Length: 331
Ligand code: ASP
Image (cartoon, rainbow, N blue to C red; front, side):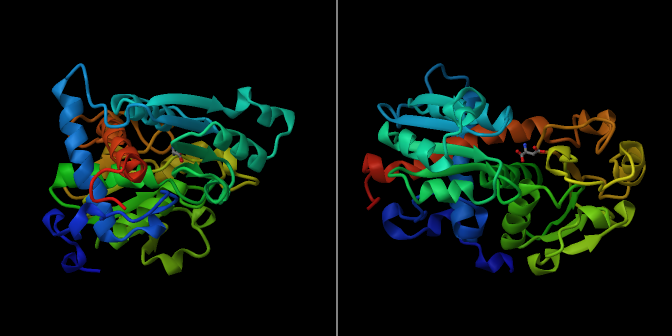
């Protein structure tokens, strides 16, 4: 896909209905145009968050957002909570570990319980691929996927695209290497979908055991050699080894993995001199990434990704609740 398929923000459909989805389940449902729309909307929230204003906005005042997390999270949960609060919503967090899920309640029963509380939006993270769609099909409010199994993590891909666009001035026509445990990574899947859709060359760099079998259908080039895979890349995106999803022996040892696939300063020299380094977190320092690279103030975008996460999630919550709030132009 070329940049010609990308529409400028000024060219969105009339009436403001540039994002026609009730839920945000995955990047797979979005057009390049809708991705650009969210990124443009997020820019406004970046500026506001940076302004240090004590009061952010009250666009979502009176609305209740439930963050239901059936799997652990630091960045995603906190940034959705901060995003909702900065928009004036009442935000309630449900941690599965302290809920009736532990007593054997089914996913659907939990979803129906949350629905009965008349939330205005739900943000769901679940360890099973497809679980968030299942809940979205049952409830009356917009549902945002905060990561489901190995399937998708759409707000991560959107915040990554925003970070790239702000750092490199564009998010099209770039060479982007996604490196590490691609097999178990919903971040990789959502990023592959978003970045190829926006017209970038996406390379997958992973050991054969951590390369998904169906990768050929995803319009990427695959590499098993890290030095070759990151050669002349504009963006090097590192992934964590997701040991919690591994049900067998995928690697000889963390030390050997680091020797072959760890991002060291020497290895990073293979990428373009101005290449940026990304990581969705949490990082395993000394395994997939060296501290000197992760903490490089010029090359690493890791803390900026976290910052963009709040802005992107504010944009998503704002956009998806507009119908409910009957914002002019939204049917
Ligand atoms: N935080 C990301 C996720 O939830 C990446 C990771 O866990 O490694 O998928």
